Image (cartoon, rainbow, N blue to C red):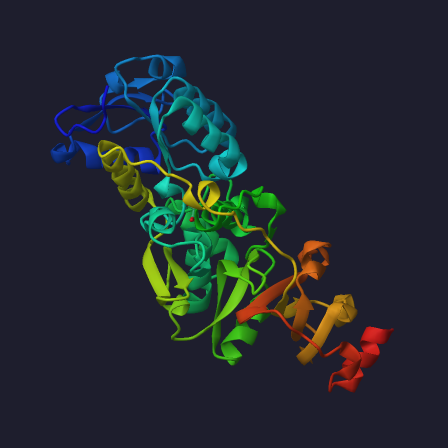
Length: 423
Ligand code: HSE
């Protein structure tokens, strides 16, 4: 059946009826213009009370996957392994698929691209990155790889919500996380959010659409907000900064790409600092247009459902990702050949490997926390995870990526610290 005929009803099989699934169900029931109906919903726990007629639900996945009257499978469950089976089975069966499962997509993107091609079936997943912000379609359609200088921003709503509550309301990390969970922003396993894994998954998907790079998300350098210390927030405030979890990709002079996820200082009043709560904000930098900023809700039932809805609507005009940067251009490569301006914070100055720094600009130490700011070669983070050990946090400065650093620790103007580094 042709999906791109407005008059033909789109019959949907939905997997999952959580915050997003239910949001989609409600929105679709109120949007007759789309002429799309959820015919069956596959759920895991049949005894749970739900706001929809009981006849809609089944626990039998095959009922949806083998039903020839269902044109589209929408997968909105949080189990990435089960989602992989559902999505690949549906694509092989020739059904169009819409998913929001960033963990599953990031882990299998190469195979999923091949399946779409082999079975000539569309697979759309705008909701997987930044929920309501149409960043994937923008990167795919609008920006040429040659012109695209960078993509960076806040791509995880829960951590941004937690940081906002900590900075604005002085809430504890634990209370702020509980609120993020209660509001339905966090993953069911919130360590994915707070350890930066969800942001790494999203960055890996963005790298495919921005630069044609396919990379396992966990091979990216990433960290989250779980290692941040209350003293880091004070340090930031004293210097007129806030802290945000930022995923970034920048084109280097070599044409290769610098990419990582880390907490970042952002100047109060700057664009990223205005992104509060569960909102996301992404800056796309191109050599001709300079910087463009995309802002919107990055988590929650309705914002995510709005992206799913937009994908369903896109199926109507036969839209599919062409993976242009991968197929029609020479895909870029990731590189470790650059420097980062960072602040390393630790409970004990002796635990900071000062010898790893190229250049130290500032340090401070008190009985609670020590902070050392300077320049590190990125390979020092990629090769070894000393900076992820308990009690240590690493925060990057704004515009932290540089390609040159000539000053060494022994040249630095802080003799006392240089002495410590040589011990
Ligand atoms: N847990 C995710 C977030 C949900 O907080 O951004 C949206 O992807």
